Length: 111
Length: 113
Figure 1 (cartoon, rainbow over the protein chains, first blue to last red):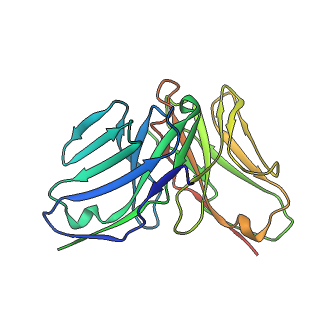
Figure 2 (cartoon, rainbow over the protein chains, first blue to last red):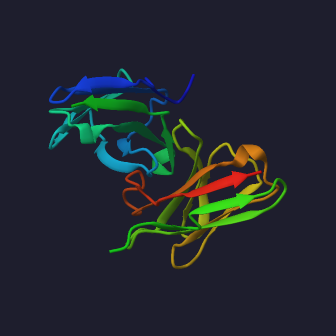
């Protein structure tokens, strides 16, 4: 079983719609969870961090965490073509000293 | 405020050679992590350095080694290069109290022929 799993996509949504990205992880003791955005040919960029169960909102982005189900999600409201990128889910193991990334979900937002 | 910088940008090496990649962290950051990213994959954790010590290591062979200097900059060394080492090598820095919130450099594209 992979430590961090994501649907590779591609996920295609029309402009203005809500994009929903999902991630599951295997280590129950993980405490820190992150979403990174990676444009083609660029390096990853941190967009959200979440540490507690529930929702965390930042602008058009909402991260959701359910530790009991070992599930993290990212919602992007009012999706824009500029949101087209690969979204990487990342989970901290061993108290933050080791971060495991999923393979990423490719998102396409159609104008 | 300069972000994370890496050098060189691109590198071509031959099998069996050795390579050194360099990274300068973002100002105020003291923790540096290195990742290998193959095409179409997520970054794979190589190791993390803090206070000039390797604090945690991923599933990479001993051919991969590193160093952190007193100014927090870091090097990644790879010996006896294999074709499979061709990848994008990413350096990420973070502050000591939020190690998971990482800022990535632009990466070094290594090609082994």
